[in-house]
Image 1 (cartoon, rainbow, N blue to C red):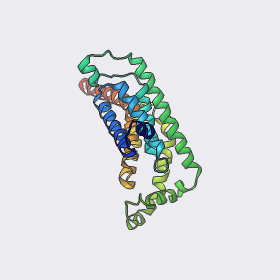
Image 2: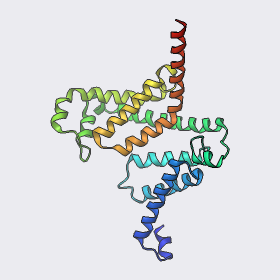
Image 3: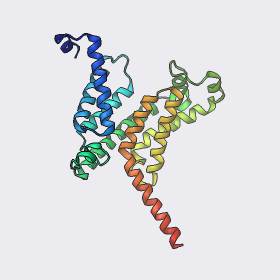
Image 4: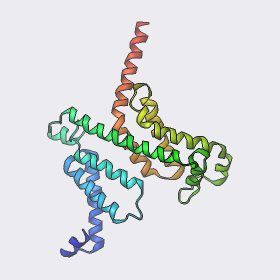
Length: 237
């Protein structure tokens, strides 16, 4: 992009500013649901260029954001909440196609959490709390003071084991109706805790968004079914 900008007389700073403005604009259009397909393609391409241009500064959030934008780019758009559908009455795609794309995202998340959990389980650090201690005390993630961590040091092995179990068990317990809500809330709570204890707010946010996009609709339907069943049972009683 910088090379193309130089050919038309733009400086590197101006070209990068335009790229960031286009990325912000495409992301805003995606949130509003305007020009969904072209906005998703532009956001994915621009974010990928930005992330791959400075890999030494990138971390997991950039990779997962790229994954999420890629699924938006190929997803059947628009949906019923998009302005593209409400304003221009563009026809919605077959719900079965939407279900297929969501299923692919679900399997992708299951693979991510499972292998991440297996990797943690193979090391002793997550079982004895050492990995939790290093993660919470290493700058710039040392938001919690050392004194506070020392007072809660006995809980670190329990938290480490809980992380291993939640991630490794995700692909096994997210599908059954009896455990789906519990496991989804557990994985969301884990990312909320990561965000507030380590300052990884953007990473936690993108993982929460991906988790809700993949399993949120099914969890809502399951909750509604349980609510209706409870009301029916109370009415009959």
